Image (cartoon, rainbow, N blue to C red; front, side, top):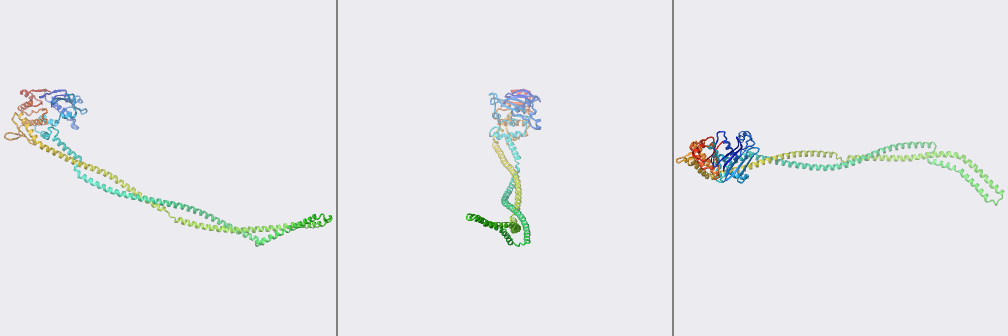
Length: 633
């Protein structure tokens, strides 16, 4: 790869600045603050980009330093390169809000994809750029960075002959990963976490055992509650029947009480009635005694006698009437046989006598009738008294019987009431037992509620405990995984070291050969054999002794390290063309060393770009008759 031209559209102090570079030697001259470093930084930025730093570092970073003085939003540029005979145009916008990066194949007029860009710049990264093809005064002195990067490339050069494997960055990345893994996984806490998991699981097991016991207790209590409920239902049913029977008994008792009250009232009523009847009977008996009637037989005899006497006149009259009728009949029957005189005399006498007797009888009957009627009335009154007395006696007997019946009924009722009361007393009362069952139910329910509350608390704690276990196990698994990853990292480092050891001899030999070639060329044969050990300690192998580079002059050391960089660039880039950028790299060189180096580079390097604030490089090129492209800033 060689650089054809660069266009600083808006970068630092430059605005639409174009610089054309050519193959071979290029000298970019400018006094201090002319923009040499800006141009050098632009090339580096076009290849690798310039990122805006964060925090306090952002005020002094490259992004801020080379941000355009005018129109900072338009912060971009272009660079054309040639690789394998093809021209590519690199376009980059550095603005942090609108960053872009494109590589265009100008020969075909197409934009390269990411993979194609990576293939184009294969083997070239920013670290390689600074330590091989980009050489400055500070970079050419002895420093650990060159030593490390050469080590890093060693393993790769022996295998892929590219920079895909970077031992330094690989080790750094692996160590960083290891550190991050150890920090994130807190691997040192493995024993603590494992013990915590064990304790938590034991606590969980104990808690679950307690929960099983509580659940069994709850189920047992529920069964007891179920049994109590059934017993309560049975007792409630029995108590309901008892209450129903008791209500019936009470109703019957109430009826019996009412009946007893009625019977008592009736008994009292009959007793009073009996007393009245007895008094009335005594009064009637006294009346009969006063009238000389000592009994019903006497009264009936007198009544019959009076009745018979009252019937005698009637019979007599009837007899007289019969006689008169007979006489009349006789007359009527013998009317033709007798003469008229005879017809009337004898019957007339008979009829007259009969009539007289009839009149007398009727008169006497009428006279005696009143007398008899008085007696009859008196007798009837006596009879009425007797009837009343009999009725009173009968009523007394009835009342006495009823009174006795009522008394017996009252006695039976009282005895039945007593029996019913005894029966109600003997009837089992389940209310107390039901109250006891309800109290036991409440007690069991409270115990169940308490047990359930305890169970819920334990379950909640178990959830938290299980969550803790899960977290601890996750941490433990993370630690185990981290240990595996750390072991893999250690294995990877060991493998890299093994590979490095295997290729070190081959790489060291090649590096020694190329570095010896370059030191011989730029020192004009004064030093032609460099020795570099596996730690990249550099020595000059003279005919008489092996001299450490640190014992040589500063100028010679600069030449040795330039030779090493050029040798490393050859090994890394192999046959690829590469530009060599020198930023005041000859400051420690005397004219002879500088002349030898410039001649060699001009004749052997594909492209050399020298940035200098002095004219000595131009004067030396002119003196040596070297062909070069001069750019004045």
